[in-house]
Image (cartoon, rainbow, N blue to C red; front, side):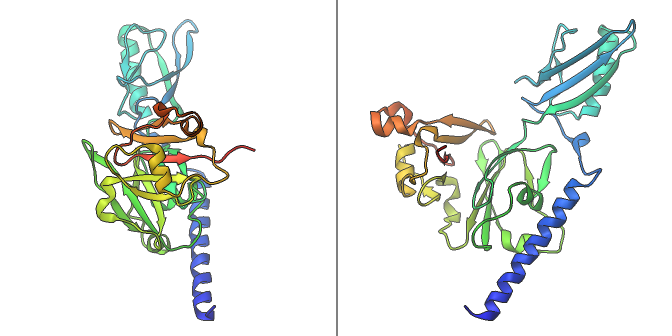
Length: 298
């Protein structure tokens, strides 16, 4: 191998390492949590601590309902919290309880479980999968830290699928290599319900057709993008991606699909399809679906 090329490659890897270590140190340092600006959403679990006169005390953990509200056991009607920060909920709930239920209430609100702002990371990173954000958005560099960074060749293209216009997905294509090695401020922001796809530059990336593809990843021979066609099923997409590997667990295959701007998981037992002919498990796909085939547990 050419020594100059080798030295450049090593230098780039070291820069990646320094970037990751620097961000990791920042994220682990005191005062970096930004939950106070986090806006609560559906399915987040909130912890309420309420006290009042006569030693009254109430502690409850309540998930935010589909209508965006919570109902404490002391209340008769739901209190809408969706879109508010915990500080805003604390202030408004205190006033609401004082007006209707308790004299001089003291209220503390915390997010017990972050659920509403999930992102899906697929492709060539160490730990792909779903990540629940603990703030409204994160930088691309922070995301790389949480997923363990890219694997394989360091030349990567990153595609962000974001649904902002009532179902219209506008892909954003970023040179991950240049972004991570840049000393300028990270301008790429990842938001809840984004889908982030990392692919090597040597792979075929049909940028013009990103609204009309199926993403197949996990334990398949050729993970990546498969052109969508009418009546395409899970099995056909997997075969187009080179079929299952020997380490695959076909029975635990799942599909990530965006429904009403939220990522929903559908199960597809492909073992039943292949061995028992159960066609009900071989779901019909939609453009943008993401198929994941997990590794078997030996």
